[in-house]
Amino acid sequence: MSLIEQTVSMLLDARSRHTAVPAPMLPDADAAYAVQASVALASGWFGGNPPRHWKSGGPSREAVQTHAPLPPAGVFQSPADLQAWPLHLRGIEAEVALRLREPVDAARAATLDQATAAALVDAMCVSIEVIDTRWDEGLQANAFAKLADLQAHGALVLGDWVPYAARDWAAQHCSVRIGRSAVHEFVGTHSMGDPAQVLPRWTRHATRDGATIPAGAVVTTGTWCGILHAQMGDAVEVRFDGIGQAALQF
Image (cartoon, rainbow, N blue to C red):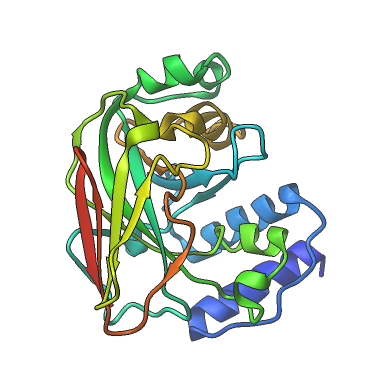
């Protein structure tokens, strides 16, 4: 059994038993993406159709950007009740999600820059990415193991959609309330400066094997707050001024 096959088997077992297992040392991102695809196929997440929800982002505009297709069962509308959703961690990332107005195939994706990709977006919303892991090492697992595990994805909560428009993202205010703790405040803290920065590389990744991204597909675009940590029983609320809010209950 190859290392990729072993990793797929480990993740399928961890997901079925809601447990954690030791992280393997995958050699590169290609191996991690192969694991993602095999776990999705074995789990029947997409029923032979292209994924409709994605996680994408990077630590800066110049850095490598990573991507993960998200299981539809773990995508919730705000306000979301996650009290029964199985999680090891409850990391919180405050994000802006973008929605495509029309399909994108590989030929079109190859031509896109930030401006032409942003023109394909019809709506945006506040989103809460819940961070979780199937690895014993948690968030200290090696980078390719985390990428194979859908970039440490646990669940996604989407707020109400509003029309997409370019904003002064450097001045964008975001607040995160977790339980009874003080509100966390952030201004202009998106790692890539503009959520639309993820679009060209995400569309090329999602269509690289000949798939077409469907109209209405959603991509989350990276955290504004790093990773904050919640506990079972906490309520979480994220607000972006001028865009909206999203909320969940653990």
